[in-house]
Length: 216
Image (cartoon, rainbow, N blue to C red; front, top):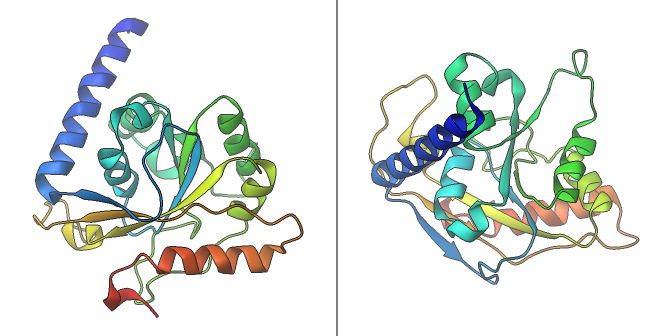
């Protein structure tokens, strides 16, 4: 397929996917302590659904969305032609191989390179979808190492509410329900801050944006 045609189809598909997400979830973005400025950022969010990055993208202003790439699992988004097209062409995802034995590139290097090329990122520090009862699973170390590698980039916590109830695990038909995507004040890693202290601070910042029923 010619490059121009793939790009055209990808743009049309992006509009359809984002439009469908807005209709089904009536998603709204809330900016608390941070503004939707046109600066490079790493958005780190809670993770309960494969559609999480779509909702974050849906509420970003178009000028920010154009330069923002989700970080997603290659094992899911490279399975089948449709998922590959959506993940690679429609959303230009940074696809991470989560199986260490099959991995040929360090995930932090992949993300750092994308930032170096001018992209903002949407990342999920829990590492996998949270399908349990806890509001948030402990963060993996990748966010800390990414923050160290990109010290000048703002890290913005993002709480996604209700999407796991719109599309419960194992279901294919979404249940219409209002979702919110809440952006919090930006963080930076301290020069002498330990990995444990930073990750705990990032977890607290993210949990502070959750609806009252989800806070510890």
